Image 1 (tube, rainbow, N blue to C red):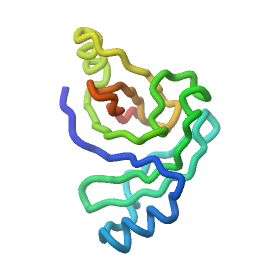
Image 2 (image 1 turned 90 degrees about the vertical axis):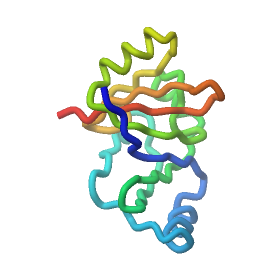
Image 3 (image 1 turned 60 degrees about the vertical axis):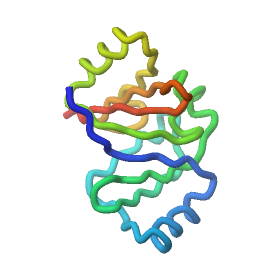
Length: 135
């Protein structure tokens, strides 16, 4: 089971302003490849801008403090943002979390078509996503 950093998600009420800042001030480029297909009819329908340094994506997502309630999940991935890793074996990683006593929210394909996602907290309450691309 391999993990690689895939993206950082920043939750904001200022998607357009953040997008301009990350372009104009940090020099990041619009991400055009490998973008997630958002499932906007399943609980989170916020606006998201995607930028990259050429290696790692930054997702600038509209903050939604109610997304967890709307999707029936304990961990809300868009209330305060998260860091995301991609794995080649999500089932093995979930088993690893379970064996370690780390609870997680299994969002499945609720937010992104073709990605199976889980979210959990680190010891300081930061949200971590691990996802696998599925067919």
